[in-house]
Every structure is written in C-alpha cells, then in structure tokens.
Image 1 (cartoon, helix red, strand yellow):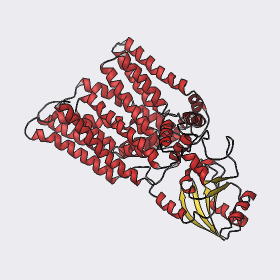
Image 2 (cartoon, rainbow, N blue to C red):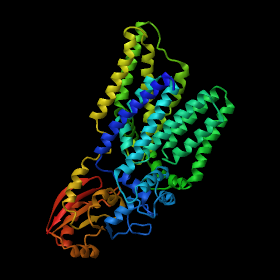
Image 3 (spheres, helix red, strand yellow):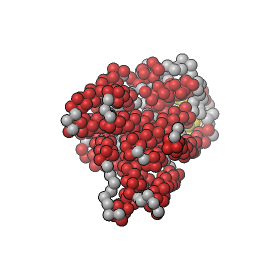
Image 4 (cartoon, rainbow, N blue to C red):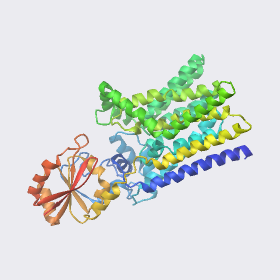
Length: 529
C-alpha cells in the first residue's frame, strides 16, 4: 500500500470510527420499537404465521395470547431456524419483498431462543457502515477528492436522517445501501461502459427491489436520465444494452418473487391500490410535498450548512483571484445524472406514500449529500496551494466535520422511543395482574407486544360482555386488571375509552379505573375492584 493509499484508508477508518461511536451511543439509548419494527421480527421468525394470533389465516375475535405466543412470534425457537422458506411465505402474505427479512432470520437463527434489539441493530449497523464505505468510494469516483469523500461520510453518517435509518430495524437501511451501490455502478458505467457493469447494475436493481418496492423510483429515474444522456450522445448500442440489463433486473426480481405483482395491484392499506388513491388526492399534494422536502432539509441540516459555507468560500476565493469556479465537465455531468433523479423520486414517493413519513425517501439521502461534497470539493480546488490558502482547506473541512458531530449529538434521531422505559416500568408493577386487550384486529396488539410480553397471558376481545373474558377474570381473581383499548380507527377498531370503560366495569365487576399511558394505537388503563 502506497503512502497515498495508506492516508486514504486512514481517513476513511477514522471517519467510520467516529460514526460508529455515535451510532453505538444511540443504539444503547434505543428503548423501544414501533409497530413495523416488531413486524420485522415477527415476519422473519414466526413459523409460517405472518401475524400474531391463533386463527387459521384470519384474526380470531376471542383468544388468549400467552407470553410464549409472543416470544415464538418474535424469536427463532427451533423449527424456524434458518427457515428462509417460512420467511418467503410470510412475505407473500404481507406487503414487502423478503430480502431484509432473510437477513433478520439469519441473525436471529445465530441467537436461537433469544429476542433483543441487537439482533436487528447489529446487521443494520453493519449495512450502514457498508453504505458509508460505498459513499466514500462514490465521491472519490466523482471528484478524486479524499477530503470531500471523508466529509460526505460524516455529513451523512452523523446526520439525523442517516442515524434514524440505521436505528429503525426495517429494510430502509438496506435500500439505502443498494441505492448508493447503484449510483456508484452508474458512474463507472458512464465513465467506462461495459457489459460487466451493466449486468452488475441489473443485479443491483433486482436486489434493491427484493428489499423494498420504493427502490424502483430512484432506480427508474436514474436509468432514464442515463439512457437519455447516451441517446443525446448518439451511443445507441450502449443505451440499448444498458436498458436491457436494467429491465432484466426487474424481470429477475419478479421471477424470484412473483407475489410482488399481487402486492402492487392489491387494494389494501399498504398496496398499489392505496398508492393510486393517494395519487388521485390532489388536495393533499402540497402538504405532502412540503413535508418530504422538509425532511431532506431537516435530516441533512449539517450537509446543507456545510454546502452553503463551502460555496461562499469557493466564490470568495474565485473572486479574489478573478477566476471562475474550477468546475469540470467530467465531474459535473455524472454528478447531475445522480442528483436530477432525486426530485422526481421525492415527488412520486410523497404523493403515493401510504402514510406521510420520511422513511420512504431515506434511501436517496446519501445521494443528496453529494451536492455538499461537490461544494466542498470546489472550495478546496479554489484555495491557493501556498500561504493562508493552504491552511484554508483543512480548516473548512474541520469546521464542517465539527458541525456534523455537534448537530448529531444535539439532535436526537427518530426511533429511540425513550418513553418506553416509563411504559415498561408501569407494566412491570402490574405484571402479575390479568391483562385484557380490547380490539378486533392484530395491529394494536403487535404495537404493544414488548409491554404485553411482561404478562403471563393476555385475553383479547372486542366485546366487554364476552363470556370468555368473564371466565378469564374470574379465574385470575385479582383486585386489579390492566386494560389496553384500541383507539385507532385506521389501523384498528377505534374504540372510545370513555364510552367503553363504563360497560367494561359493569360487565367485569371492577369499580374504578386509572389511566396509565397512551401510545400510538392504544390507551392503557388500570381497573380496580
């Protein structure tokens, strides 16, 4: 390894170590999960049973769920060890492709009979660091600038949106990995077209779509702009070959997972039918677009500030020397081909997303950071190589790096759920009491599963006058009972606690109730005799 390569490796290693330290800080802090993260474990590890419950493919209105039922749903317990066929079957009945779930099942199988946030966070962290390595290589491919590459690693790796992507035990971190990989392969194809690169791009598209369907938007627009560029340059043969490989990637994905067609044409809450309904709701477009473009600014605040600072420095240096900015066509063209697809990707994702949440565009965030990296690269090229100008470059990079670090530690990313410490403490004080969940659907039960696991068992019903509920409470013979009430009409039954609780008290023989806490889809109460 030469001196230059050694310095480059050291720069990348130091950047990754800094990001790793901040990531571990937030991983240790993470205290709970939201419903989709729990689905990640259940769909990966539950043996041919995608959702919690004892029904044969349908939710039973009356059932007793035990602590063992919850644990079997979340953890690998023997028969589902390395059972990728079970994962595949579960995902056919769900609404997502299976690649990330296979990874979680593999990691869970290595820790058989264990359930922990680390089973999801460790692979997420490894994929995240891999994404940062690809981002470093991508920036070097674009600008041949080690300092700008290392800074991009920090600007994305320490960003609120990057850390949120890593902390969410979901497939979006893997989608970001394949998005950066696709960008890198596309730049290499642009610089030196070859069948080998084009086949790699097709495989990357296949794997990205096997991770999350929303990968298709950035991939489609990037390929479209690339083909148009080839056609503009009259490179017909390369454009045709590139297009065929890209379409073959889509075809290979459909061959591997035919259920994707059913997912994308179904009429469910999360499906192609739902996306079409959202697309037709023109009145919601302005609010959705403001939210999603705001997510880029807020999630990459250090990158925005660093890019603006670098542009000011570059312009000041160019004016002082009475020269134009040192941009090069060979750098700007591939950069624009990567950045231009971001706008239509955000637009389409915003208007069709099933719920208004930033995770549907998490994968394009490292691409957005390239703009800040290019601004820093221009500034570094504009400074003099002697005297004060020689020191200006390291100072600019250091200021931007410090900005990224300070903002990462002062801004808490999403998916920490620190309030779950309080919820767990409240439930622990009543873990020996009976527990009743008033709902007619499995989603609210799934959301509260981490707390419900503290009880020996939970009786689930939507009928306060249920004979099964009466028998359950009679057998428990406890002066107190914890009651979860499903309050969400979109994902659940949408009960009104103030209307339901008097009936529940009258039917069960309890005389009063106390509100414990509310979280997402449910309200939690304590009933006393």
